[in-house]
Image (tube, rainbow, N blue to C red):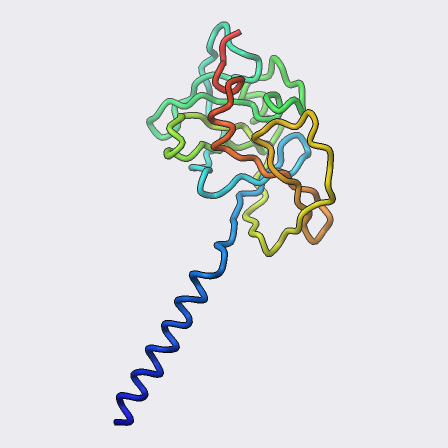
Amino acid sequence: MANKEALRALQQRLAERLQTVRDQAPTRNWLAVEIAGHGFLMPLEQAGEIFPLSPAQHVPHSQPWFLGVANLRGQLHGVVDAAMFLGLSDRAGRSLSDVAARDAGRLVALNTALQLNVALLIDRLLGLRNASMLKPAAREASAGKPHFIGQAMVDEQGRVWYELDLAALSADEAFLKIDV
């Protein structure tokens, strides 16, 4: 009899824990990067593999922010200078070798689920962040802010971070139009 009651109590505790887990909102996790001195958060489920800088083959008649095509682990990826595309820097005329010589840049590929073989050139990797480390920033004007830039958040040190929605970016018309 005592065993049946102990088993029921265990089942009740497990059911309560499962319900608690279901009720809690899943925590958001981001890859924190720096682009032209600004902090950006890329959702982990949208970011793919991180690569060291690789040589890219220039594509004629392409936008200045499109650095070319690179072979990353046996697959061709378009390489986009994120700072130039976002209008944060004018690095026109610089190649990946120029960036590699000066900066600690990396290439962050988009997740394969987004069905776009693109890697973004970022200046620095700054680790992982989760929702418990950040709080929403004070309201700011959204005029002129692209639709793929999400809310601004602030960390414990006071640094402002902007969410970069890679799924929205990969569907953006200007992002997909690499020809001039």
